[in-house]
Figure 1 (cartoon, rainbow, N blue to C red):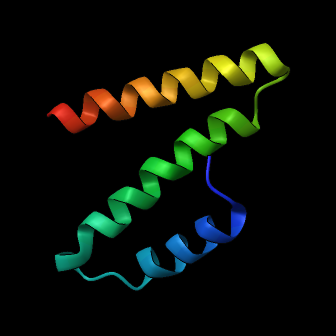
Figure 2 (figure 1 turned 90 degrees about the horizontal axis):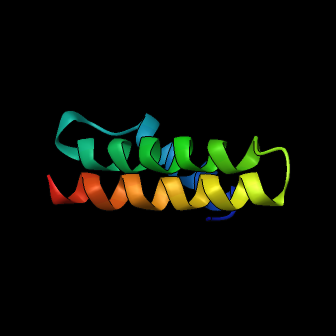
Length: 64
């Protein structure tokens, strides 16, 4: 997962994005929910499962 400073920079860019820059906002949302899953995991096993789930979801989404 990316660092908090990367997430903050992505949030600033997403907040100032225009409709033509919608991909920046979409990337921020993609990062936000995956990071949230890992951050709220209760133990190491849950964190590993959250990261695996996020990786799979992002991979499947990119196929669409």
